[in-house]
Image (cartoon, rainbow, N blue to C red; front, side, top):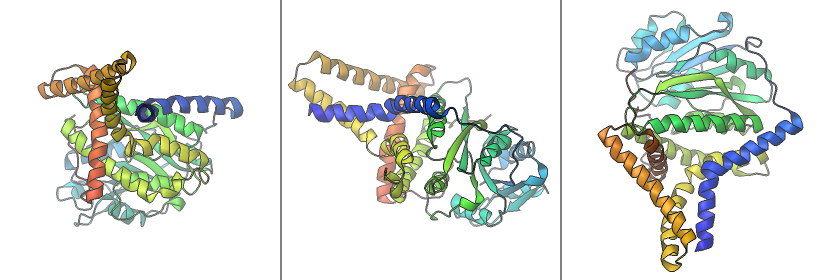
Amino acid sequence: MKIFFWISLFIVFYTFVGYAFVLYFLVKIRRWIKGKRAVKAIGTHFPSLTLVVAAYNEESLMEEKIQNTLALQYQKDKLKLLFITDGSSDATPEIVSRYEQIQLLHSPARNGKIHAIHRAMEQVDSEIVVYTDANTFLNSEALLYIARHYADPTVGAVSGEKRVMQDEVADATAGEGFYWKYESTLKKWDSELYSVVGAAGELFSVRRSLYRHVESDTILDDFMISMLIAGQGYRIIYEPDAYASELSSDNIREELKRKIRIAAGGIQSIMRLKPLLNPFAYPVLSFQYISHRVLRWTVTPFLMILAFFVNIVICIQDQSIFYALILAAQVLFYLSAFAGWLLEKRKIKVKLLFVPYYFCVMNYAVIAGIIRYIKGSQSAVWEKAKRKSA
């Protein structure tokens, strides 16, 4: 039982903390042997580029999104703008149609984002395709920072950074901002070692020639599209200076809804990307993929629960102060998460407690997502999470 306890605890620790240390160490070794990876300066490489925006009922934000898009810096003769508004029943298509600089695709039927992306890709003939969400806003130099990486022929995709805008009122979604800062650091190191393991839909790009259609029921289309490119032997680069800003979820319930969907999509992706689990075929990528994604989306949340209850049994059977201290630490952590939940309900500002609360919510979402995937009850059509108002 003690062996099982320590194995469980080790995997949990490795998944959320240990991998960061190992990754940092490997990056340091790579720099020592080969030096830091060289990257072209912005404004020196201009492949033809199409910006694709998929929007569904975003009339309240669409004017602002369009102005943000038109302000992006890039050579005008190398840039195309394409907005696809399939299924929108509000004024979103009408607003887009007012701008002759933007190509509009619209169908009244709502078949999901990936179906819309497939339709859009039939219209794209540029070297590079950049995808971004309608409810995110890009920094003006984002396309320049992305484009420079494609001077390297080993690069197949480039992922930008997601930035969560916080208001002054602390709630459980403060943990979302902390989580993304930590994720951003891991992605920087992943990218420098070899490749990021998946791109976020808020802002990512691919070489048009490497794009592969994914199944129509795909839940995490952005992750699958980018990882299929990695499976072809190309690297996914992380570019933090190209960023998409969005407001945090309106409340923890909305964030939980989003996380459960992502978790269900994570399990689906693992099932469909089995070849990437083979370390003989993908030595570095497989190590990064399993360490950064697979463990989080599969066994680790269950091992957290098992480690807690096994710890209790060990303390009952063995009156060891050492195991009692470990159990006390676990109890304190979960009590902090519970306190964070209570404070969130009362809208009281104690951000320190929201981090363990968000962490527990995130892992609960994985378990709920796995159950939803097994039941086959997760639709590929996005149910939008409500965001805070600006």
